[in-house]
Amino acid sequence: QDEVKSLPALWHFSRMTFRWLIEALPRFPASRVLLAALLGAAILRALRAARCRILSIPAGAQRTKRHHFVLPRRGGLPALALDIQVAGPPRKHAAKDAADHPLILYVLDPEPLLFGMAALFAYAQAGYYPMAEGNAEAQFRRLFVVGVGHSSSSFALDAEGFDNTKLRNVRRRDFPPWDHPAIRPGGGSNPCAARFVEGLVDEVIPYVEGQLLGLRPGAATPERRCLMGASYSAVVALQVMLARPAFKHFALGSPSVCFDPAILEDVRTGAAAGAAAASGARVGIWVGAREHEGTKKGPDGKALVPGNVHDKMLEGCRDLAEALRDRGVVVEGVHELPGEDHGTMKPALVSRGLMWFAQGRASV
Image (cartoon, rainbow, N blue to C red; front, side, top):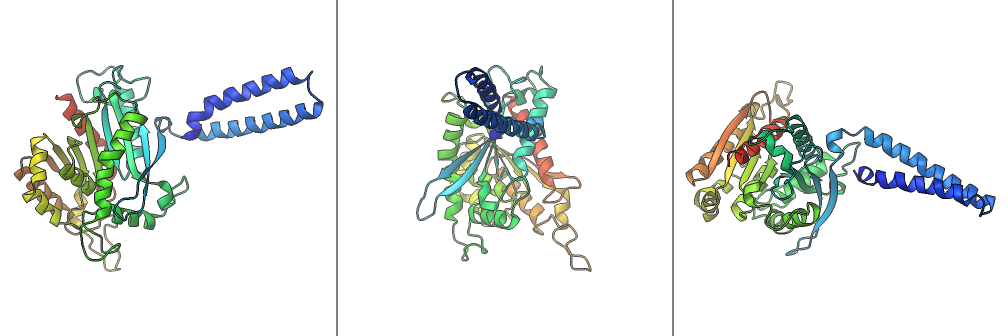
């Protein structure tokens, strides 16, 4: 991504270097000219290698950029390093007023899958329907996709893979509303999740929209933002809805309330759910249809559906939908995704969740 951004400038620098070499021949000793020539050749080889790597990246991903952001120390918690990924509407197809009337999809826990899929899907939709007006497809020409998650270094993420154990542990540390027993026994209120939720709304959103996207103040409002999460990060999105009125649209994939059912009591009895309803919040919930099979094992002791993580995932999602509706929140779903389990439902969540967000905006 950094190479994509810097490649034109590097090519310009290379051309200027060789132009200088030609002009320098009469004025400098041969040894210096030879040294400069060798340096220029090395630069050119590096540029060619970078160009080959860039051309191997899917076109829809070449516009993405990664930025580093740190939530500062707070209440005894150490600083939290985040990666923020951004993909704007492709310039060939972007609406002329996209910066003045943007739509922004914030994707939680974006690596290793959700942000990339969302960025590619949004890119394709904008290109397939460049002349669309007034419908869901037209919304992609003004859509910015933003991924917010743990820094790549925290779980050894690179092009060759990642450490899934480290990724699981940072998720367990920062996402559940109550302490995960594998991280901090006792089941108390999780200060790491509270810090993540408040940091997202109070620090990350202003930084993204003001500095990275360069939007004018007031261009992005809750009505123009959607928050997407899957599994534990869907529960983070739910916590955001109950804590801060920063989003109107929430696309939740298999929200793991079955691990922390006490959050349903917050929805049923707390003032925050009523406030969310009053603000016009709308929630879409999708779940893999095979999640009803749970974590059963076969005669060989191996899981029949390895992607599933809980026996009551579907039940928990339905309980959440019912609790939200009882408080007046508009809920669509629970939509069951045919053939998908807890792990494989994420691609379908991206396409269906993005279309749901776009359709909600098109109807305004």
